[in-house]
Amino acid sequence: MSDAYGRVFNFSAGPAVIPVPVLEQARDEMLNWNGAGLSVMEMSHRGKSFLSIYESALASVKELLGVPDNYKVLFLQGGASTQFSMVAQNFLHTSCDHVVTGAWGKKAVEAAKIEGKVNVVWDGKATNYNQTPDLASLTFDPKADYVHVTSNETIQGVDYGFDPVLGVPVVCDMSSNIASRPVDISKYALVFAGAQKNLGPSGVTLVILRDDMLEKIKPGLPPMADYKVHAENDSMYNTPPCWGIYILGLVCQHWIGFGGLAAVEKSNQAKAKVIYDAIDGSGGFYKGHAVPASRSLMNIPFTLPSEELTEKFLAETKKLGYLELKGHRSVGGCRASMYNAFPIEGAQALAGFMAEFARTNG
Ligand code: PMP
Image (tube, rainbow, N blue to C red; front, side, top):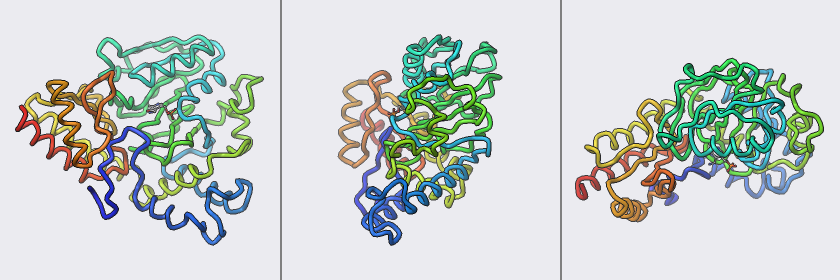
């Protein structure tokens, strides 16, 4: 147990850890938000109270991520998975390029194919998605409507570590590493992320898109699938995910107070190093899935020598209150996800256990 509340070390890939001060504030404001006499879940999204919450969340996310003025920030629903379809429905006129670095990139291709022509420029399947490609060596279609990339693959734990510049509009699925390090939004045409890893609860999806993209939207889309409709209505064409927007705003304010994304990145690097060092220092007992150059700071999949030892490792860590360490079946073994709000004490505790487990079972 990690704190006065008896909270576990939550290694979940998402929904995931939320900063405790944010949970405390939400608790304190639950029954009567800011003297309004009701909770955020109960108020009209058209009322003065919620509009101030929305404005504050919008300003906070823009400040934290450094969103330039020529971008719209939308709070949508349907998760990042809906964005896989929506991006193609809005912008896939002739063809799009996709770089597939893992399971989520693959799903994005499947969804886009329903809408039009998709060129898979690179696919990491041959090495079971253990690396990102050298983007400079790839050939992108200069006439492509856009290229889709996944900045961090949550299941395979591979991350580019930088903002790609590709000469065509870049659409980026940042679901699992948004706000984990400084980002240059101006390098992207559109960014999307489900909130449930680094931004707050599930149910709200952040979309950031450059204004000129709004002019490229296909006509005749269903209103709920049309970015322009959402942009023109400040994400309130229909009832928005009010609670999610409220928490997302508090989470962004929390990280601004922490020192912004440079400070967040430093903290994430320190946490990830603890676990990668435990893997690399185990004499081969633990094996990381990702090649070192593509290692994610957020999701660290690793395997043990056998299925039996993996089961034992998972059972023992569970007893200690280290939750959700089971890896995805496509990679096997374990996965430690450590998003922004995950405490370094959790990484140190797991690394200590890993060393002891390898010593007694190796
Ligand atoms: N992309 C990535 C990188 C993800 O990690 C996830 C969810 N784990 C998704 C997309 C799908 O998100 P959602 O469940 O919000 O649709």
